[in-house]
Length: 286
Ligand code: C2E
Ligand code: MG
Ligand code: MG
Ligand code: MG
Image (cartoon, rainbow, N blue to C red; front, side, top):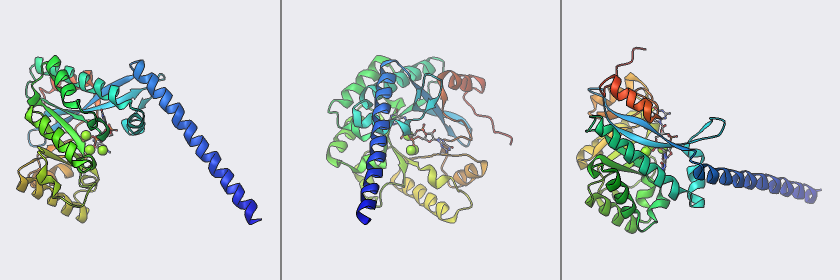
């Protein structure tokens, strides 16, 4: 009987595995088609100086717009894109689109605006990534100083040697580097000394329960102190409440990004946001 049960369990597992694999294959195929048929779109979320409420930059966040209008978020397809190599055309598209958009916003008079673009570890394996990026930057005529690349903490610590070369090459061109989702990835901070980083983005998991969660308050304060003592910039991710803004401003963390100011939005809505308030986000009365 046990044997029979074992066989049944085995059977259930293979069926589940098979279904999973099938789903994945279908998703891969759909993603490939989406890339070929230009179904990707770049949304932008403002980075805001929380003192003045002025928009100081934008982060480019890719979306997949399905035929029925459903918006599929990057968490659902970036991992598959990495496995299949589709990450290369996708990030090429994001880089080109975001640089062109930044150039348009600069031309509208928002010349101080910066643009942040996410890179994944897989992309860093491409030896001519820096040249590719610089080609796009030159074509779009945006100053490299107005660009920032975001890499997660995980990426910083993998494959340190080749990544360090990439980072120095990027910095030599004048492009800034930020560590994304800071605080969730790694326990040793010594790596910070070795990388030419311009800023840290405090992961939203720390910000979420501020100001009442004591542990998160302590951890956030620690990250702020760390950035200050290393003289690197700070951005708080996932700012959703005025109480969080107050907590962060009290501790001299002035740049924030989050749903309180705006969700990621299509370019034309971002342009409206810029024009409507001259680049300033009104304090929401809730
Ligand atoms: P990320 O770079 O850490 O981006 C921030 C994510 O947090 C975004 O999710 C954004 O919509 C979300 N977010 C912003 N403010 C708030 C808030 O106040 N509350 C909450 N709950 N969430 C907030 P999104 O757009 O789904 O992107 C997820 C991740 O996918 C990004 O995390 C980034 O790692 C990756 N990603 C996005 N676009 C690209 C891309 O073009 N290339 C690569 N390689 N990765 C990308
Ligand atoms: Mg990011
Ligand atoms: Mg992040
Ligand atoms: Mg994230």
